[in-house]
Image (cartoon, rainbow, N blue to C red; front, side, top):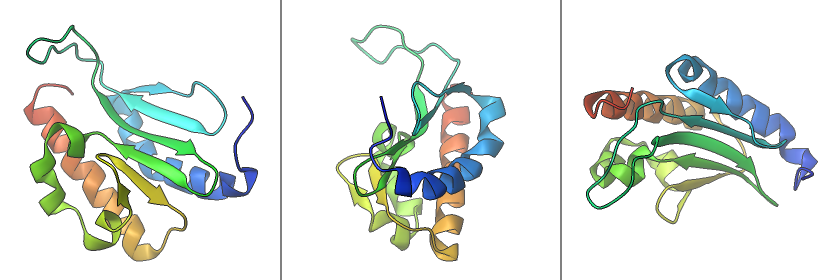
Length: 127
């Protein structure tokens, strides 16, 4: 599948660099160009659900933005109080942030959110 908007590739690559330090703690999946995902290697089973490997974070180039899919906010909504306001302003839906550019403030808040999410996953035994 071709990349939806090749002009967003530099932003995608910049965001991917922010995720790189976490790759050693997770399974990296790049199912197609313009898509990058980090999955837990731990098997878990929420009540009434089959075993699965929890998704941590992913990037997907969309038509007009790079989607930053951040699952810690989905698995524990209280974590949103620890996420910076510039990043929270980009949240659409439950766990997808629409990133169109990357300021120094937003970069720092994404890094902080990733660290917070990693600590959450560690506390759950998913890392």
